[in-house]
Amino acid sequence: MPSEAVNDKVIKDTKGGQIKSWQALFFKETLRFWRVGVQTIAAPVLTALLYLLIFSHVLEARISVFDGLVSYTAFLVPGLIMMSVLQNAFANTSSSIIQSKVSGSIVFFLLAPITPLGIFAAYVLAGMLRGTIVGIAVWLVASAFFSPSLWLPAMPLWIIIFLLLGSALLSILGVIAGLWSEKFDQLATFQNFIIMPLTFLSGVFYSVRTLPDFWAKVSHLNPFFYMIDGFRYGFFGASDVSPWLSLGMVGVVTLFLAGFTWRLIANGWKLRP
Amino acid sequence: MLFPAIEFQSISRYFGAFCALDDVSFTVGQGEFFGLLGPNGAGKTTLISILGGLVKSHRGAARVMGHDVTTDYLNARRRLGVVPQELVYDPFFTVRETLRLQAGYYGLLKVDDWIDEILHYLGLSDKADSNMRALSGGMKRRVLVGQALVHKPPVIVLDEPTAGVDVELRHALWSFITKLNREGHTVLLTTHYLEEAEALCQRIAMLKNGKVVALDTKDNLISGVEPITVRLKTNGLPESWQARVRCQEGGTFLIELARYEELEALLAALREAHITIDGLSLEETDLERVFLRLTGNTAVTEEYHAI
Image 1 (cartoon, rainbow over the protein chains, first blue to last red):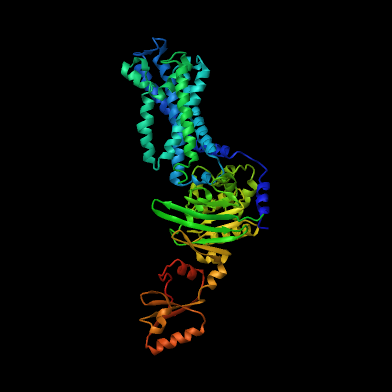
Image 2 (image 1 turned 60 degrees about the vertical axis):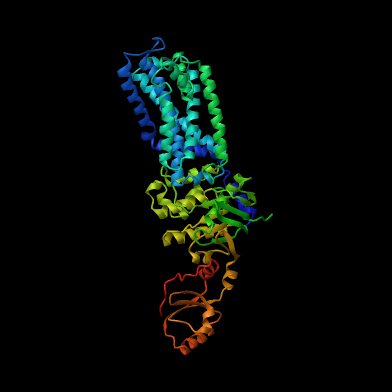
């Protein structure tokens, strides 16, 4: 019976359990970083805590922030949490895509019936999840050992908003970087010359207000600055600029890049030549 | 309605100035076991990649069970299983996880019975919980076949599935694929092993430099060539026989004969011309001969068989 019968049988046989295709890809992306959790979760948490240990030890007595309202260590922790969130969100999507491109295993989902939006959502959500897990771990350890005042943030809703937006934005940048790169060293270039400078010059380690006027203005052109500043506002109710301005800036950039990246995938850019 | 399982309609594809596929058209009927042959670089993999949506065509259309691979790609891909030529795998997962994830990409959740059956037929049951990294090349190849079948696609495409694979797997693989074909699945096979195509395929398309140079049933292709080939090693040939040489490499001549009786005439001509025979063998024409002839490969590829 070489006809429709085979086709129908195939579809009936599999009515047993259905899942959305993109959810399976999201699950695979999550399982992937979970399997190598020492490298993808424990290591970045340790790195953040080392920064915290060293910088707070050296600078705690010398600097206070927001006109003496906040100790340097307390100021530093939200910056480090956000930095960890951003770096890990980026690392997850970018390294997963480049790995599957280099190894060729990317064909497994390219051959499958997943929409471009589904591919986009699966990767970005998995990146957001990893960033969030690392961020929460840094927050828990830092609050417990360095700065107990952070157990009770002033405005948790702002924290959640900027956590979601920041991790989404960097996951999206990671997708772009992963698609663009053909080799691991190209990805490293993207990371070292774009992501790292933008992160380190965003006010993780200092309040932008303390900078000379010119550099303060330059910082305001960096979208990462708004993510860190808005996130920090959630902890202290104080920040360099209004959280609404930060929300607007980060929101617009994220939405724009989300749409852009979705179109890249839909056009098969560097995926389906 | 009985539409073709696979349909290529005037497919062209360029890589820069290089034309990888030039106006390729053919169809594969539902339930067929179809062979796609051609030398390296003929465009076989590009054609299959277009069918699977991995590569875009510049002109023309491709359809799987009537569904266009670009405008109706979700339906086309649900009906297609592709075994890629490259030995690729995801090192983070076990064999069973790999198959479950692949099923998930097709929207399927509870297919463990079918996965167990695939594992059984591919001889992977005892490897189900091994990490992909720990498998040998042949085992990884089996998993690739399993991944292509995990959503029970009506159309199965195998791109050189037995390249570098041991005899045991080739047997297991072909009995499994033949069984699926008997159950109604359409199979498109590319292979370098022409005896495989000869044993399995009902119809065959041959590609050369991106063009279809032959498209017929296997039997018609073979009957289009003289049935007997003489492989002769001498230091020359009589004038009267030189036009009959199909190809020549050094002192070895391949001559095609219509009947065995012609051999007598050939030997008589050699004796009269006082030409010494250093070696002689006879072969029945097979697909390989057809293939060499159509793809214009004039080299004498096989070892010289002395008598």
